[in-house]
Length: 186
Length: 183
Image (tube, rainbow over all chains, first blue to last red; front, side, top):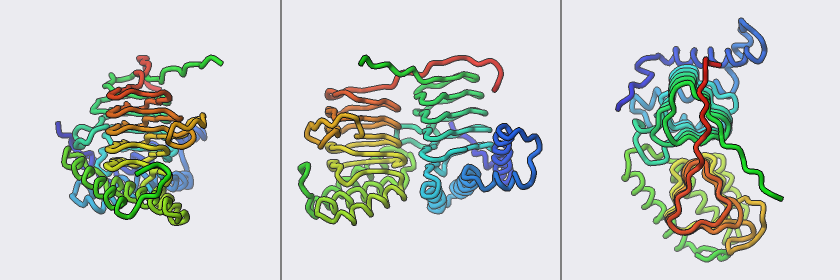
């Protein structure tokens, strides 16, 4: 199964404006703004989440055109500056939002409006080509410390709860939680 | 290589050659793109370990810090790992203990850092790992525990007890709840 790259569907500008729109949406949820001002937009553009999106979009743009070395340099820039490891081969549709980037590992494909929270991981645990990486639908949230591993498909509107470990495919509109910790007897 | 003894230059070269050879085999075994950080993390760790063992602690600290900044892997110089170490995605990897040969570690795995200070041969409170151990993404081995040979620790597992040879550990499946509407 070969997935078409979003760069063949979306232009770089569409991708970035989608990211900005999603970031603004999340910010206005917090601030209660309905129409963000230019200053607010500029503010959001300079948050780490948006800078990561910019770097990753450029890296992927270079990657699919065969400039893999340069793409890896951009990816390395993300690692050093923001402590987030996004592989340049990741195909992520517009609307990527990463509020707190530290410790995130992304190596998979995702649809629109992906939200990744701190310390989450998305990867196949084997040494396989990008076609076999995990694939997420539209509007998926990966909460803090959640792990998605293996060649699996996750449906639309799925919420992967904090600390959940996902090893198998999930249908659309599902909420996942980590099992409760066991209380040790004192 | 004995715990607590410095490794010689010849040993360092042999270790690096074994790591490189195993990484090349790993690269050739699949068609997944393995980043250059994989090799950088292992090399910087080996150098830090070598210099720390031979009394150059500042230099070791520099290599350790460089590893943390450039690759995201935090591998202390007193960690002792046998030849054939492969870390395909070094993001968030924290290693603190003693391991045998052909250790494979995917991203975000943690070894070490328990609450007990008991010493089982790897220093106070550190785990002792056998040969050919594989860590999936986010797997953790904490405290002074013995892990056998050819053990596979699945994604997101936290292991705080001894494991026998050829064991395979998987994290419990998450609780699913179908949703109505999007929010």
